[in-house]
Image (tube, rainbow, N blue to C red; front, side, top):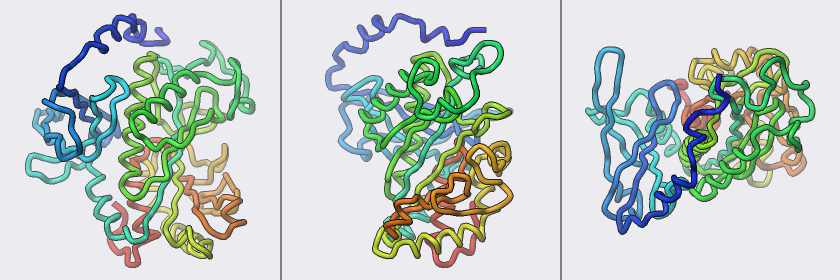
Length: 366
């Protein structure tokens, strides 16, 4: 089976001959949205008469929505705009919410409900940062750079590793980093992870709903960069069974209170709230009600057990970690290590805001 896609072998010089052609005052807008419950991203592109100055200048658009039995239409409503690192200025990428023809949010539109919750706690100025782990695969589904038969050497040298025998796919990682910077993503870093061909990038801190917007667009950029290189990026929380690390999407959380003097008390109070609602959070920390995380949260490979809640200072095997420097300074943030790599960031930050920041949380997690 082929290890890379056929399209990645096309002569890229010829492609750039056409992309460098002038386009006058016209502008290409690529609409990006989240596809139903699969948490996949989709896109399509249109021409507008001039470069938009803001999100209000970008028109709504329809797309065909297919089920097993019928084809209908749904509405794309632009909510956030970025520079396009593939088609370059003045062209744009636009993240969209999905609505039914009745103007009701589609079932997959978790941004809409999340934003309502975050509006209720905006005076707390919640900051979030998310650490997105992912694994590079060939188009045949085999981990990128792994031997065709057998396995690479055991885990140990790969985390933040350097060298052709330790780091698989760095070109892809660095191109994605630059694409994010060009687009306007608040990407704050990247590193090789513990399993070979597994990597991580961090986005944030972002305030409120911007965290979900930024992470979703950074995921889109990752898939597009991988497309050019002819490989796949999977967010599967446990892509390889056995003695290999899984993939999470740790989230760092703070408010104006935790960041202030004596903030450690507010951090500890938030952690106790999370302890009481462990089962409900596990249910929304992957798109399949916790079933994906069952393969990852085993209590091994730098994870907590899915069945028990734990917290500790500098404890990367806990459900929630208080960084060592935060414990020393007595203020800052905490890290919830339970969300799976394929989580919906809107669902995760909504759950945390409802549990930790709303005084009267009576409606449960959605």
